[in-house]
Length: 135
Image (tube, rainbow, N blue to C red; front, side, top):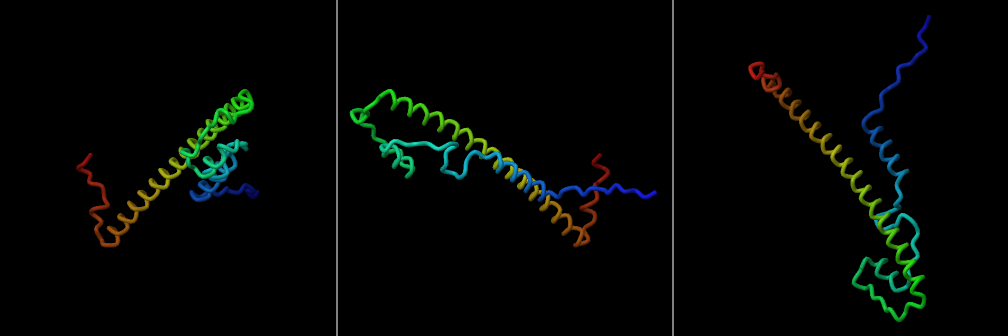
């Protein structure tokens, strides 16, 4: 009888990271650092300040508002979208932080291994063997 089961290979760290990034990208609600979670129609007096990132250009002329109720409803929608966008940005930043921490840990491990290899290469074996008197 022959064993037809094949041992599956474990994914590499790089494959796992690529898979995780693809998963995060698939769930992302933002397309870029200056996008919103949904399309947002801006009134003319707000379009230029938002597009240029210059809040000091926001000037509201109450006399230019023809329909205050519609204006208020639009403002509420904008606030809702901005809050959801802010939450998406916080989530994105948290994920980037986790990935950076993982990368940092990986670099520390690699640096430690490189140091141990250099000690071994220099025949400094005593530095690599744990001292049993420390127990």
